[in-house]
Image 1 (cartoon, rainbow, N blue to C red):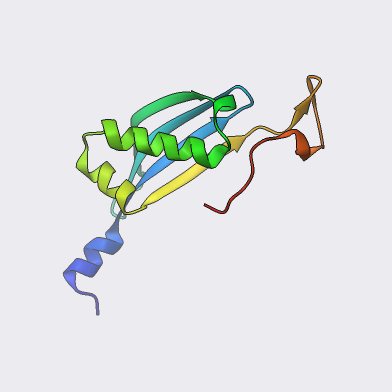
Image 2 (cartoon, rainbow, N blue to C red):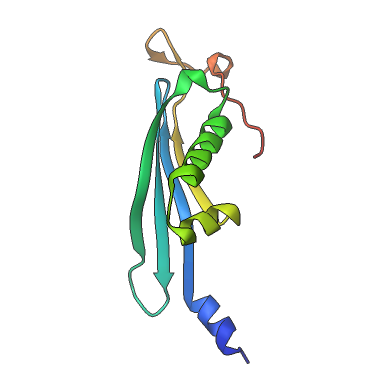
Length: 119
């Protein structure tokens, strides 16, 4: 049998969601707040903030994401959002450009500066 606290935790889920498009020129990132109460059919998604960064000044997509998170922590006033970030209750969905060479799609991944680091 579940306690009342366990039932409440299972009925409601919230998290911060970073969605973004990381292209060869710009990285456009948004922070959303996702909230789903199991008694309602549709989850609530609330826009919090967005930023655009020049891709070329960063060593990789993980550095862009870290900068975005740092900017949020310095500017955001909503305590539940800040708590989610501090507790790593974040989901990330990114569209990342493929390599381009001479204005054409390339299968050569060596001309892309961004590397996976597992972070």
